Image 1 (cartoon, rainbow, N blue to C red):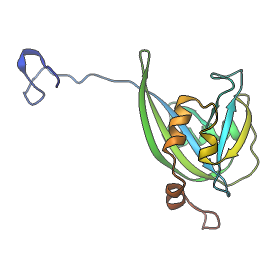
Image 2 (cartoon, helix red, strand yellow):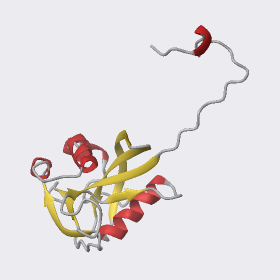
Image 3 (spheres, one colour):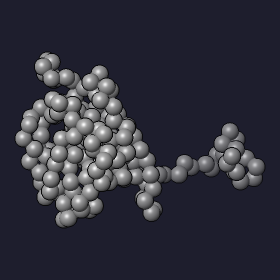
Image 4 (cartoon, rainbow, N blue to C red):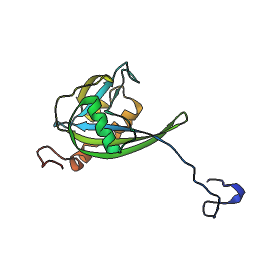
Amino acid sequence: MVNFPNNSSMADYDPNYLPQKVYALIGQKAIIVNRKNQILMLQRSEKSGAGGKWSLPGGALEIEDPREGIEREIQEEVQLKVSGLKPFCLKSRTDGEDFIVIIGYVCRARSKAVKLNWEHDNYKWLTKDEALLLDLTPDGRYVVEQFDIAFAKATVVSFGSAKQK
């Protein structure tokens, strides 16, 4: 139970009440599914944070729409065309004084050729169970754990269907 000053509660009117502003850093991760229903896993380079660990395409949201942000990150990191991009999980955490929100997305790969940028040294297409055996970043692990291929099949545009606008 929260203790409010002067034995008051949020139900009590306070003409001087001002809500506290909370600022969050927003990170995004994308599970990209291929035709074999495998997900794209990326190994972080030593030049980037968490070198050697595995994760998913994604990164920090800049001053942009979240959908545009994750599409930008996918293009920057792996240069894949994707479709059916949908958010499917959300996580918040603190890191020191930072409040961080992670948005997990799922989508389908529309192209095959993965071209890595400097942030990653290697990639693999794996099942969820295989991916969970890797040395994953904490946020990458959380998003993979939340992923359900049945959800992806039901909500993400499947191969051979009409193109999305």
